[in-house]
Image 1 (cartoon, helix red, strand yellow):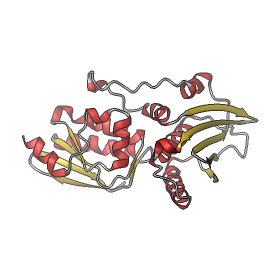
Image 2 (spheres, chains in turn blue, cyan):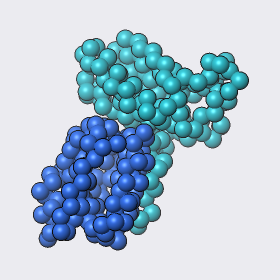
Image 3 (tube, chains in turn red, orange):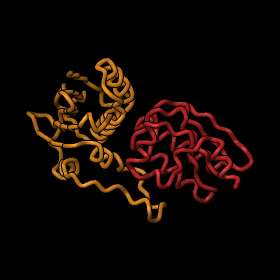
Image 4 (cartoon, chains in turn blue, purple):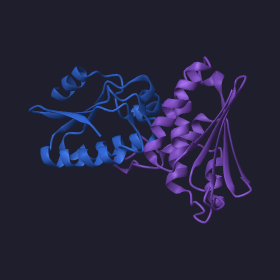
Length: 112
Length: 148
């Protein structure tokens, strides 16, 4: 699995460079985020701009990221594509995550 | 239109199946079928992770996926040769009750798994199970008008 990581003073951003976040990749992704959070102890920005398809396993990994980051500043998601927004909407997770934000919106919010 | 695919019991195979279906549906001039791809992914994941193949049967290992589009209706059937599906598992599929995990309580209690079944139920119009010879077959019906 490929991803890009960008570290700033107040957050760490991770962008999966995969078109699918599904049962084949979600466990690896969650494990990597656990390592990243442990090592950096910062708010996490999850950029889903390259993810065209997510299933319930991918959603479970996002929930896992949410839990992992609660003690270090929380999780922001951004650049969510329409098909991925559907799964947030169907599971009511759009009540927890702001799925319409771009990357800059997230950075602005976490700086506020 | 009728498509039948045979898929190895490997989670890595689900992505290519989704891509293949998308291409075939585009050829058939279907509307946006993202929810169908989601259904296929959830179903195949459940079958590959949780079914018990009959290891004495040399034909038991691939999972069959049949997609039938007839007018506004689309039926997905997933079949696998294996031990009969447990009654409680069948009820989980066919019981129409949809209960998404609550998102208004302590969010730390949100589950990291188990969302798939609820997603399947929230998208499908009808789910049925049948035991055909040595196979478990799940049929999911879907209204294409709703998906468009």
